[in-house]
Length: 377
Image (cartoon, rainbow, N blue to C red; front, side):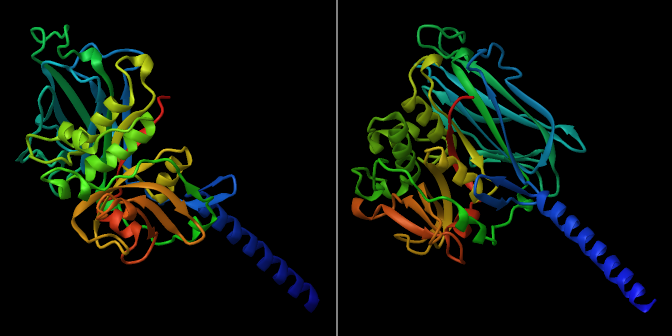
């Protein structure tokens, strides 16, 4: 009789243990994915989303509602970018408004003019602010929709033709919408030791510090993007000329994110839709795993870092752009082309993935910002 009780007790404990294991397995499956020999945990709560609208097959004919999405994941910050054939005369004027989760549609913000002119704008009021090429919601408020409007200015009476600006030249619009208070720097990096090693060979090597330009120390973004565009376009472009073509007259800088990806699109592709091989956007990435998947497709990634990065040519307190070209999972090192190197010999660098002064921390200081290239779907 006693042994029977103990047998029932042991069986009951075994069942409870099995139930607990199953619950644990379900919990893991809620935020993990299996890909080949890779098992990686993604953030449990997504904090950033990228939305795209392509006009490759169906050209844009009306700029009033060029890109409108409602009932999206709530966000506090929005970054938009575009791909277009640049008009020889006239320009596109981009406007942004967002839908407040509690107050409805807010005021319009003039964001950018791009064509034969190239300048960003900034303003701030109770309905949020558009400064430094991104839109910010007022503190404590969230948006769940956005509206991008495009106005054609100049050209042939504003209607394009003969090299003038025209809506049909817009190829793609992208929006990266993020809830920044949900972001945190990744701490569990052991899972990345199971990734396959990647090193993208043949990427041009440029140091901004050796360029013949009066503002060479400020050319990290165009130099990094020029290396990316040269590799994907299979043609060597001049970083100096690239920098001159991305200069933002509104902010008087060479590092405006949208200008850099817009020029990369121009350089890599031809002048017709049939000649479009790659599209580009400014995007915040969920995790290093998302960056790795882009590398696995053979595409380098421009990223923004900030602060101290162990092994870098210098500290980057005000931010810096570099090009990621590979990953060494055994030693957990991120392989980069860092244009801040004082000479060409020092451009290729390996940065520790984790740690107080590792890649993830420096990239996280810029909320995982990246210039992403991808094939049209």
